[in-house]
Amino acid sequence: MSVQAMRPRHRVVFLAVAVLGATGLVVPSAEATGLSDELTAVAGFHDLVRLEADASGPDVEHLQAALAAAGFFHSAITGTYDRETATAVLALHKYLRLPRTSTFNALDWIRLELLPETTGIPDRWYEPDRVEVDVTRQVMFIIRDGAITGILPVSTAGNYTYDSPRSGQRVSAHTPHGDFDLMWRQWGWNCDRVTGWCVYNYWAFTPFYGIHGYREVPNYPASHGCTRVNTWDSDWLDSQLFIGMPVHVWDDPPEIAPAPPPPVHRTA
Image (cartoon, rainbow, N blue to C red; front, side):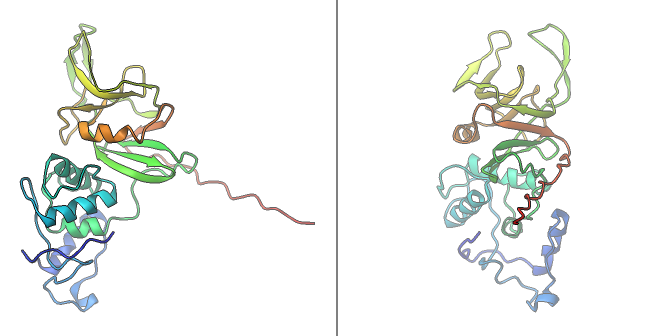
């Protein structure tokens, strides 16, 4: 991706980029590249800027555009560091296994520019359209026509026990793992008459669990079993999901056998 140079603000030391090693990224040292110890240009950025809630201006516009190009942001580019921007940054941090914060740190510009080619999801070559829910990282991948169109922050089951208003018993909050298909859906807000719980744009992948928007999507597993997404991400999913679409839920990515080689056509 390409983002225009940032406005002069705070500078960072180039050698500090070594922290990217924690995400699996390899960045050459200043000696190896011939650069000075002061970072003056990285992938088009003259300076790296730390951004957080209530920030606004061209820096935030550049951030929103970069997050959108990488699949983390699906809202309007406004130049305001709003809740949509904050949760997209959270998704980036979850994806890279960084501390789960919504503050975009100065070095995150480099992390975003140098996203690893390996996504950590299975290569299901036989399913060009699918949903992958990575419970460990608490992110959901949307794949259409073989390409990732979205990486969303989610909250799956908290693995606690609670008193079920429906059954009157103590039950465990657990998100079913395995291979499913989207079975049916509901539009807008729907509230359960028994429990009083309300969900938004519900997509069922089992008779009792699904993907839905919710007012609270913390950065850790907290649901009763469904996969929660933010309401604005749920609106975007309307253009991505369809009944019958495969859904895969896992803690660790399963190993998928590679595609068979194409047949060899012999001529006489």
